[in-house]
Amino acid sequence: MPLEDGAVREAGVAHVRSAPENTAAPTLADITALASDNPVIDGWDNFGHTSLDNDFAPFMDGGESTVEGSRQNPKLRESVATATEGMDISSIQVSRETLSYYYGGTGSSSGDGVFGIPQTANTINRAVLVVYFDGSNVVAEYHSKASVRRSGPITNGAEGFMQFPIRLTWLQGTNEDAWIGEMLSDDGS
Image 1 (cartoon, rainbow, N blue to C red):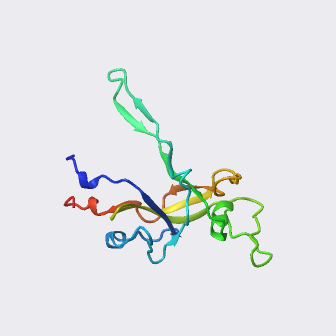
Image 2: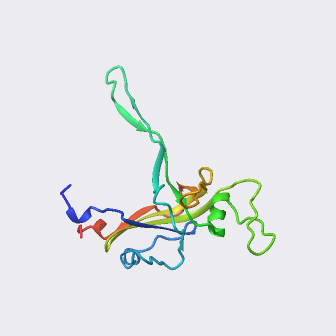
Image 3: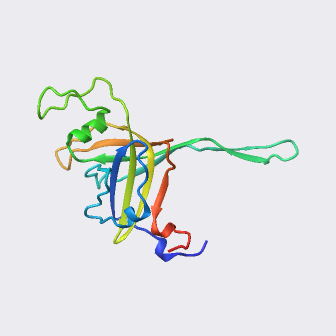
């Protein structure tokens, strides 16, 4: 692999977008046309403001490897367990959408301006697009299906924004998950 200075990215600005599960991935042209101050893609909803203090936290559970062998060759083969991957984020918006993601439902509504908390927290399945900006350079991470749920208690201290910790777990959707960006072109540009 050659050294490619133009392929190095610093994710200074990032936006999370969601759409109904199994929504097709945006095209390369869709991604490269985005602006960091207003990354709008038809059919994809903005996830809203997320915390700087509790930044995006990718996770991976599982994926352990086991080396198997025989009496003749003790290191004959390596097998790798299935891994579960995703990302923890903290929403800092108090909105119906945030509460829906956090509690796993639309909530019962006893009137305008009221979000009724469901008795049982559930997951919501959505397609997820995480768009990273480094100046005018952009790259996106697309997941056809993600389970969205709360991942901890609400933070509501006297200082700082309220935070709603939300876990996005990548699931197997009908479309292939992908990274999308110009530097991934076959010609390396």
